[in-house]
Image (cartoon, rainbow, N blue to C red):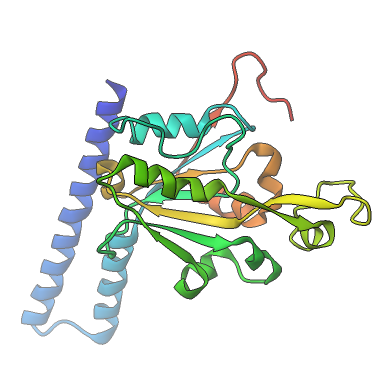
Length: 245
């Protein structure tokens, strides 16, 4: 019932944006027809329309490790499939921030993955989003749940690096000595973007699936930018343990 109400509200929000965009375009046409437009006004109108087109309502999901956060996202968005799509089995936790949205400008559905090595540069994730060449792209076949599940498993992949490299990446456990730590398991990817044709996502909803609370500090941009800019945060707790850290 609550899900239906939320769906209705998101659809109403989408209709409101569409109607507002039509009103702005009609007003621009009226200005042109009456010789009242100017380059400054046209620029302002363009910026307004661009803001409406790119506007998203972001809901971030936050929890400690293994609290069912990703399972909850699976239940909300992928319940019609016969299997979990986002990996959520034991030991398969979210390793990098994952954005779930719908790309209106793309003709296909996809997963885009930013290599963990980009942490060695000073560029932010937002800056990298403007440079597609740095991302690994996997096409999503939405007609096959098996192929989709295989593609989604790429998001949680890890690899072993030496302790010195892990320290440079900012992923060496606090207090660990690089000289004696040996091999360290790190995520393969720094950030994941998934464009998926869910009705709510098509209306402008974006879901941000974060790593466990224990790992939030490893990506400052997530803590200082992405979470504060979300319109809502869903904090998932275990009933028997609550918050442990």
